[in-house]
Amino acid sequence: MKAKAKSSNTPCPIWIYGEYITTPPKHPSGEVQTEGHYIDKGGYLGANVYGVSADTLCRQTAAVDKRKYDVYENDILLYETEEKIGYFIVQDIETTVDIINGEILDLEALQAEDIRIIGNLIDYPEFIEGMRYHVENGLDVPYLPVLDVMKTPVSFLKMTCLKCGHITLGSCYTAKHKGCGGYFTTEFTTKIYREKNIEG
Ligand SMILES: [Zn+2]
Image (tube, rainbow, N blue to C red; front, side, top):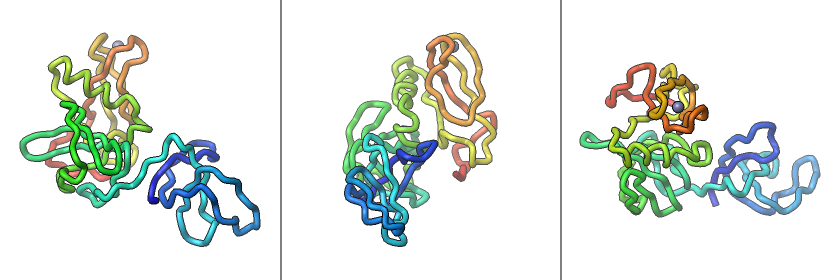
């Protein structure tokens, strides 16, 4: 089964993409690995097998986004048409949830050209509550075509606390201001227009 998961034996967990396996092939060095959770990136037999954390396992779906990137479970999708924007979470390989109105939808009902993967819930566990806070309080939902600006031409995310007014600049989306517990509303320091295509 094709999947991605976070590595469990690297200093900093990183996403590993490939074939999920529980019995790894013998390593080329002859070292035998025990049963567990692994992702095989492919290539020379047994050489690119990484131990992963089972609770971060996300199966690959049949869907792709507008950039032809494969969609995985727990991915956060920006849904964008001329008329509206919204956000979906990929619940399992067939279903997705609209976080604005809670509606459950078949993943295949979303057109590839209308969706863009902007992150994954495992990296941004507070994304849903951050957006829900806007919806429940009648605020405009932020337009976020990217949640990590590091490899993009966008300089920074500008997060303004809706409770105390504190402003934080950062490279990654954060839902809450730790200082006071209030929710942030988020925009970019570089003005992003909806028609602009952000790489990354
Ligand atoms: Zn605050």
